[in-house]
Length: 108
Length: 126
Image 1: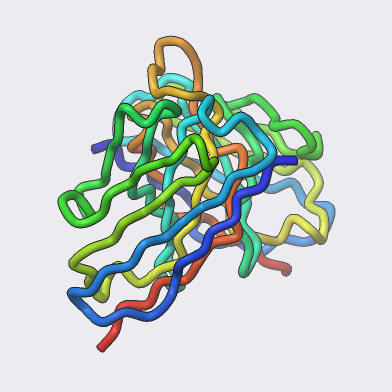
Image 2: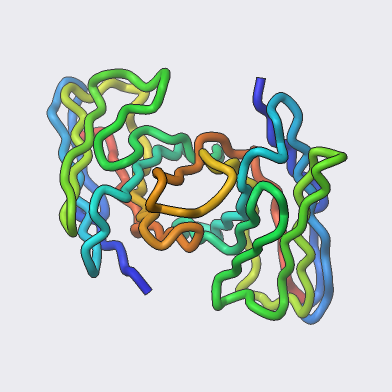
């Protein structure tokens, strides 16, 4: 099974900060990597698919990069509505797409 | 408008059974694969079962294999999750999720969950 490791598990940041979240796969997954945002009590919401493609309707301050085993989600200027938990998910072994453990972004 | 409307959650004793439903109006249901993803209290996301758009292929995580079954009725635009031999560790919010494609061939594209239901809570406790 492919394991997905996110870091950090949590971070504190201020509005306007640039935030970077990392996701590492236990084996190469090419560009089969998705990112989701989840707010408390709500379902996850797709942000990025295929490592770097922005889902329709998602603000352009979100971007994704990487391939192989190392991936990054970047929020260029953190907004109040961005405080949430972010999950990566590999789809290389779809439908058995493993999720990372999540990164909680909190207000500093 | 795509909607995914789960129902059927509740409390059940260990060893019991429960069936979840996910009504899916607003898109051509039979054209898309579907999955169930769960989230235990305070924990992360876990994919548990998937089914192709036609319903001909199903897949399950090892944690639920032999106990949970996914199915769909394309004439009713509804996805199902039959859960048997429930354990305390199955306690979670269960989400149905729409896949981006009808199948799982990575050579022809990318799969991702572009729509999610609101979730239904399953509690397994004596």
